[in-house]
Length: 289
Ligand SMILES: N[C@@H](CCC(=O)N[C@@H](CS)C(=O)NCC(=O)O)C(=O)O
Image (cartoon, rainbow, N blue to C red; front, side, top):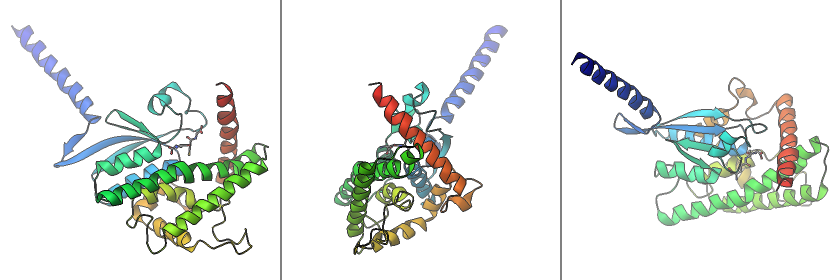
């Protein structure tokens, strides 16, 4: 009899502990609001900052959201089994929310905006779909063009490879996209009127225009090249937001003075690791196909 009672209590105790552990990873109710534990697979790059900025913007808007940052190493983690389970395309960022994994920054932004309706995407259906057109525009154009421009103008030369044609091609296309953005910003503060995941997706690439050598002022290109004032002002406007400011801090903890002006050491380390990734991941992995 006593044995039965004791074993009943032991079982209940174990059950209680297991349930508590499980709940820590689940969406739980806290003060009547949804409390979310989210893991963010992050590195301090434009695609990584899209997620950090979105999360910090949600927090700044009063959403009850919490997260855990899992810092990933772009050079060594991307092709590991554990990371490919989270991000099958071997790229950062990725998230795991209550055991549910997602990759591709645009999809992650849309997911986060959907989770907290009315904060980072307009509620009006037409405005929302217009914003999503611009989000896809970013994903298919701005990210790849600015990314390739960086690779060819900064990273590959560091690894001893200079390819003038792609340097020029991606540079011209990036500048053209900045002109599209300048026209879209005419007469409005943000890309789709109100601040949204569209601004969050485009900003991390545009803020680095000097680093990717995409001439927004027209001073370097000359020949009457237009100064893209709408874009330049928008960059400052977005930068001034509390959520954006907090999002850009990720990866710069203790070195906040480097957020807007990278030290020589950081620039060299980005060039070096960018060069290594461009050579080894881009060429070796593709060659295995
Ligand atoms: N379209 C993807 C692009 C992600 C991407 O290219 N991420 C880079 C860092 S910014 C990366 O993971 N690079 C590692 C590699 O190419 O091996 C997205 O937006 O999430």
